[in-house]
Length: 319
Image 1 (cartoon, rainbow, N blue to C red):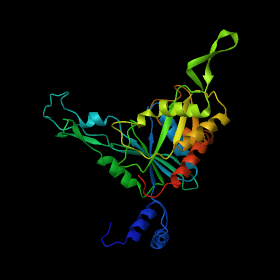
Image 2 (cartoon, rainbow, N blue to C red):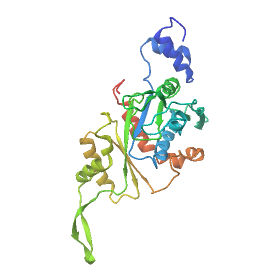
Image 3 (spheres, rainbow, N blue to C red):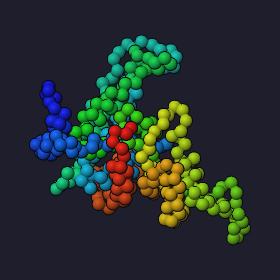
Image 4 (cartoon, rainbow, N blue to C red):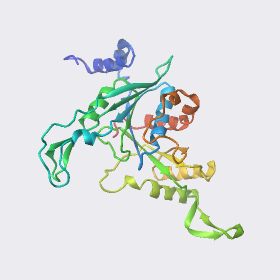
C-alpha cells in the first residue's frame, strides 16, 4: 500500500479488485457510503460427515444469486506436516530434521456466472502450524494460526462472503470468523417420549406425543450440547439450521411451532434440510456439475436467503 494514502483511497483500491471502477468506489468512500466488510462465516456442528454438501449447497445458492463466495478450506494432515520427527507421549525428543514441506495452497473456480458477478471459488490451504520447539505450559506444541488469518485477510477485498470449511466442525474460530451458525444434526426426530408409552392398536406400544415446544427442548439438549461447557468460550450465534438424516415424521405446522420455541430461546431458525443416512462422500464438497445444476441449487435457496438476511441484519463489527 503506498505511503500517505487516505483511508478512502485504500477502501476504493480494495473495491476495484473485485471489478468495481476505482473512481466510483473512491467517490462513495469519501462520502462515507462504503459497503460493509465481507462476512466471514463459520458453521458449527458436532459431526462432519454430511455437512460439506449442505454448506456447499448454501454457498452455491449465494453465488447463483450474484454473490462472490469463497470456500476457504483447511488442508488435510496439518499435524503430520508440522509434527514430523517429534516424539510421542511424555518422552519429548529434540527434532533431528525439519518437518516435511507442507502442501502448497490450491485455488479453483467451482462455478462462475456467464453474465453476472456470481462466483464460487474454493481455496485450500494450511490453517495452522505447530512449533514443537515452543511448548506450552502443559508440554504441548504451541499452535500458530497465522496462516488462516493471512488467508482471510487476502480474500477480504475480493469476496462478499468467506465461508470457513474446517476439518473439525465443532471448533470455534473466534479469531477469524465474524459470524457463527450452528447446524443441528438429527438422527431421530423427537416427536414422541421414549420413556413412557401408551397402548396402541394391535397391542403394540407407542410413545406419548410431544408438543412442538417439548420437541424443541429435546433438540436443544440432544443436538446442541457440544456448544456448552469447557473448554468452549461463549459464542454469539446468528441462527440454527436443522439437518435431519431421514424423513421428518411431522408436518410443516409442527415444525413452525418448533421454530417459534427456538426463536423464543434465542436461536434464530434458518430452515430444515433432509438427507439420507450416507447420501454423499465423506467430507467432500458437491461436484462442479452439481453446483451448475439449477435443481440442486434450488434445494438450498430458502435456507440461503434466510441466512443471508440474518447476516445482513447483524450489528457491524460484531464478533
